[in-house]
Length: 80
Image 1 (cartoon, rainbow, N blue to C red):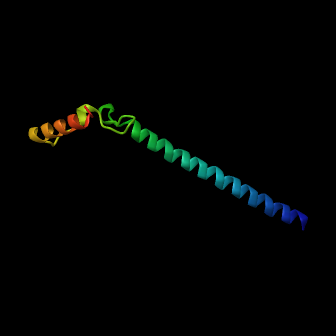
Image 2 (cartoon, one colour):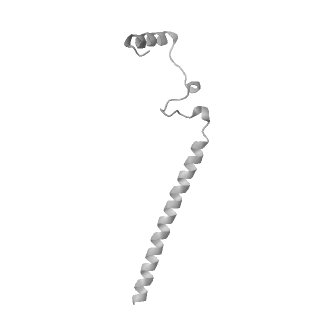
Image 3 (cartoon, rainbow, N blue to C red):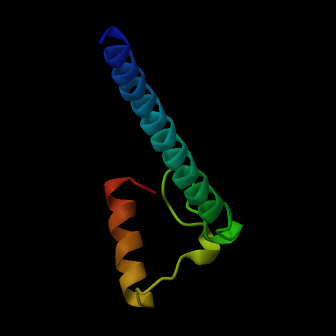
């Protein structure tokens, strides 16, 4: 009877170790696939450290008049 209990606990322990190992391997494979995906993003489209897009990727939708008003406003508040 003691051998049967030892065999059951050995099977349970082996199953738990196997499950944990497979879950870690799956998590590592998923993370590696994400890293590979994000490493293929073109350098000119990657956001900067502060999250802003590089100047070449920015598109201004403001008209000349809007830009002049904005510049005047920023000058008045001392931001420029």
